[in-house]
Image 1 (cartoon, helix red, strand yellow):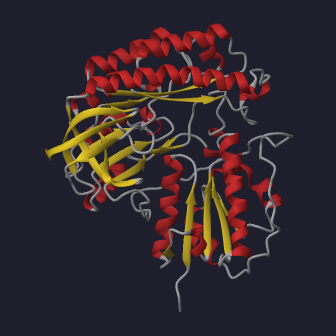
Image 2: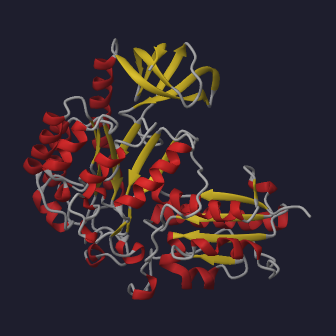
Image 3: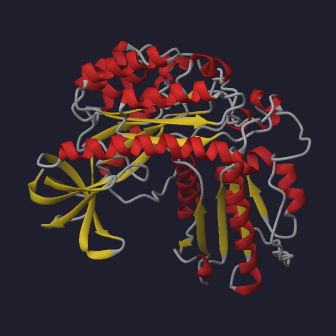
Length: 465
């Protein structure tokens, strides 16, 4: 008897990707066969993102495209999982009853095998080209306790990596206790809850034994790790322990929250040799009044002071942040202060997003009064400033050497290898283009940087690292 062929489409952030890998782990234990080409799948799982309008639009388009495979391909069963299910289960069930065979929320990842193997025949889909973008317009019920996720995976949870075998994301906590006025995540991901440090270390050791060399630690607020459990060591204590895990080469921390960063954390990141000198700290804005309206706190001065503390401890650290433009009431003066701050801060990597008016957030009570065109213009202006800074920083690196994790052939040409320095995180930052020399994927090479290529750098391999 042939085994079920399963295809998976994972949308959204790296935290969502870990959820996908947990589902893959359960399916792998059940003997499923995984296919890269969704047209070859008997069962297709779409793990959705429900964060903002644009993410939900992508999720909806993906679901509808997948449903068509029931009539044009071999697909027998379509399963929709993830954040959008957790946030909008009733609406999705009502709108997609004829297209989707099962819905799996954030607390039901271990039920994915049953969801893919139910004997209930797949309904013939009604082929449609659109679907209301959930939460974008119209009334909706307020968040209820039943919709708040409580799940937290652990080191014993089956997991099949969807990343290259030398790198992995490790979710050290779930949920969020902050009340940022633009963010709906606490309304469906639930309250902040940390894993135990022992459990995270156990998973890191297991991943290391499987050949993982690079760990990317993720949470909604990584610097808050352990405080909800009364763990006085917090993230600093966890990093010190992970720094001793055999065979791990790089440890990278994502999503520090400025108000929960301590001097001890900065000192630990600087002292631990395997913790890469990379500071990922979404700041969202710099004007104090804007930050108050965002329920964030801080100012240009406090942000620059915090960045300075990191730079004094780690002079060569790469700095990454994200900002929101077009938040309700953002004045030209407030935006210009943000531009001036980015000029002064000189980030290595930066993401800029236009504000999304999200139902279920406190900011939704205000008028979404910044026109879309102006939001886009402000985003483009800020990114043009950052582009100049990033290109200038890359120019200063020409002629230096870097330790590079080689990741294989360039997707567009076999004549180039690609890799990343420790100051470049997977998927979100630039790369190193290797035009001379060879090293196996998943190994570390010493690279002489010879020229720039926009956000990327070009180099030649001069030895093993």
